[in-house]
Image 1 (tube, rainbow, N blue to C red):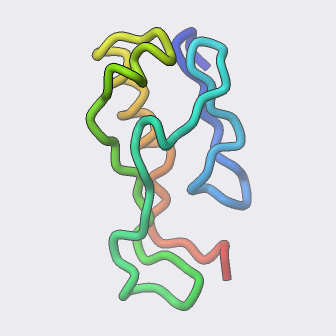
Image 2 (cartoon, one colour; image 1 turned 30 degrees about the horizontal axis):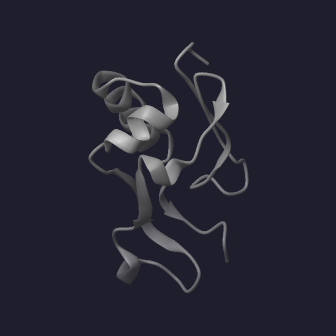
Length: 93
């Protein structure tokens, strides 16, 4: 963990966070983006072919909510994209 944020994916559900805090405050990944399967055609039923988190542009509301700057938002969003980049996964089968 660094002082700005803490991200810990769930062990058996690596596309979701067990812990996600911003400046010590419990945070919502949906404030920073959304995840989804980029290649569902390559997966079995209830599995993912290429699950990725995609950051969305920051809003003033989110910046105020967490007391962060645009640069800090970018750092957090990039870390979520990195930590929640699962790829091919069959945990939900």
